[in-house]
Image (cartoon, rainbow, N blue to C red; front, side, top):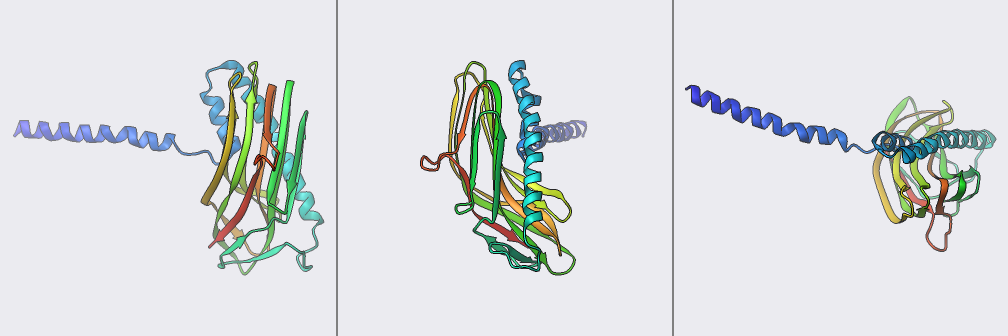
Amino acid sequence: MNKRFLVIILILTYLFSATLPAQANDNFIKQPKNFSEELKQKISACKNNKEKELLKRTLKMHEITDAEVKESIRQYMANKPKPDITLEGDVDVYLGRDCNFYAASAGNHGGSGNYYANFNTSNNRNLVGCWSIGTSSSAWAWVGKSFRVNGTGSQVAFFSIEGYYGAFLQSADYGASTGGIDFKLYDYTADTWVDSAQVAFLYAPASGDANVYNVNYSKPNAFQATLQAGHEYLVLLQTEGYTHLTGTFDSYHETSGEYSDWYRIKVDF
């Protein structure tokens, strides 16, 4: 009886301990929801002090980028015709009714240092590039769709996006090249970001390294958001790049496939 009891205890102990790594691993591999979260994870895990310092510098520049993007959205939304005036490209979303967006209605771009940036609403496309020689540079662009919500009250909606991104990143002499692509929702009426989902994190951290990206992506149910009747929103794809010391971030050339875009955004209730 005692031996049987001991065997049972040993089996239960083994089974319990065997589940712990899997549970811990499930928590560990959760994907960051945006570029900022990814950067913070990279900084926390980085063992190289010089590389960590460049990542911290990137995070500070990203905060400036996010503020500039938000201000550019405010300006666009404020200068649009009022909701009771028809605007070509603007749409209404009805609570409870699924819809698809295929064409962008707005975009903007900016940066600092040595950079080039633009956007193309005809192709729902972001074009960004920057380079550094002993300095730091940044570039950003976004392109998206504005919409009004009709109905009564509020309802949860699921946002999906499909598209493509291509980029070339290179660093040398202990420089760094970093970038990100985020899918985001902004509530203009409440003047706040609602949610976001990471499409890609682009990185070339080591001296002399180069990374090339050419990816068709699909992010089903990337995030969910509670849409409020009477509110105006902008759903967008945001691309940003950063270089430090000696680095190149190139996602600007349409003919060579170096850009990021979306070809469908879905809103499902």
